[in-house]
Length: 227
Picture 1 (cartoon, rainbow, N blue to C red):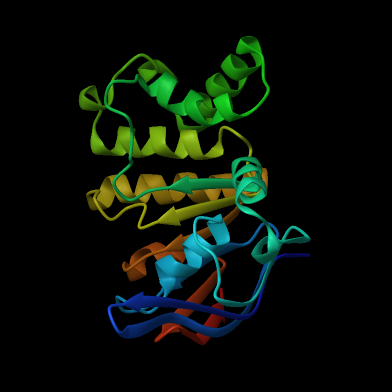
Picture 2 (cartoon, rainbow, N blue to C red; picture 1 turned 180 degrees about the vertical axis):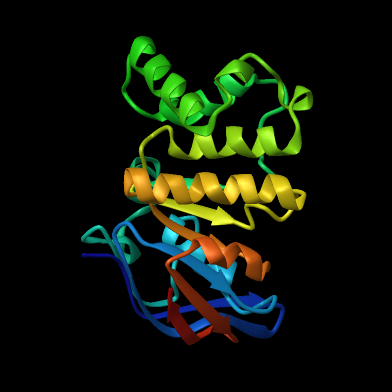
């Protein structure tokens, strides 16, 4: 079943007098429960596509339909609420708040929802358990290893039970062993919980965990490989 549908998706930016087009007439469908890896050289449009799917940025032209919602037509407030309800984002450099504990960092997205303290605690505890760091709930980011920080970032991304999990170079700052553990965790989320994952990566090794590999170049899809 199709979850994400891009129709002639185009994005323009202005850089001085120059117009930059990181995405051009992109047609793409991603099914619910799919694990997609996006590869391509710098400037090929990978992160732009990720940010459009996340509702962080808006397309200049074309249509973006996610879970039957025409994202390209939503106003700012509606888009912000849609993003809070449907998107989990894993950042390469974690983006954890240093003065908050692991528990508090994970709880943050839940504060945007009308939940009781007890319900928030239940969801945070479950997310901590899923990523395997329940014993680090009261640790601050400075007290965690890189791999543990990324697990907190993943827990924060999944705590709202999002429709789509987006990952921007999720292993880019990790050693190979820790990166493999993180990729195994993402694959577990996809296979056991049916999570839809779209991942940007420069590392060909990480594509082994994905169902589908997409190659972008100059803003266009040049290859799509189903594994």
